[in-house]
Length: 163
Image (cartoon, rainbow, N blue to C red; front, side, top):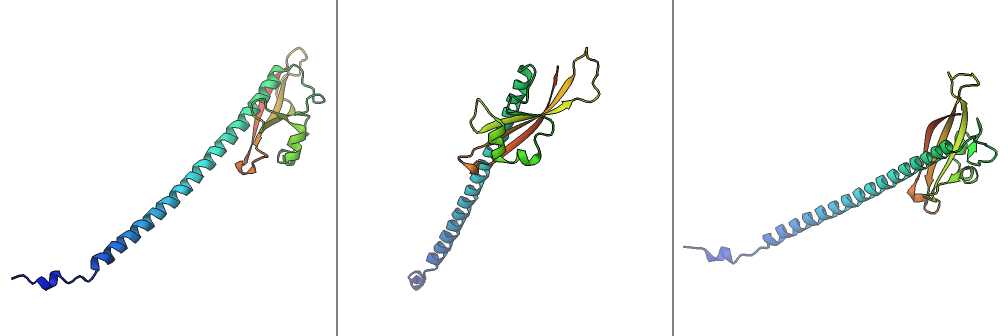
């Protein structure tokens, strides 16, 4: 009836199939692990970028508040305030210039700000009895010199103040 010799014939085909399945599962696990590592790096970079840009913007707003709260602004006294044409693009990108010509934030040692007087706003009255609107360019920067891998962000905002 039944051929028992076929049941006793073990040629190892299940072993081969099991090994192939294990290799495929191992490769799938390695691929998933590497994908996860890349995603974690991307999330970390995004977090650092957002922290830098928001910190630079916050310190620029701190400078705007300082300009708003201060009466007459004197570029000779305030080292972070520069006259017209006093700051060019190369200065904004130069770390040494920032160290010497900007103000550190009261909140974060890695953030600094500086401002440039752009002059009197166009189309304002020259009547001496009326206030004049002064225009400023304010720069905020976040850069951790102790850990340069965190990147750097520089923000430029405009500000107007009437005197």
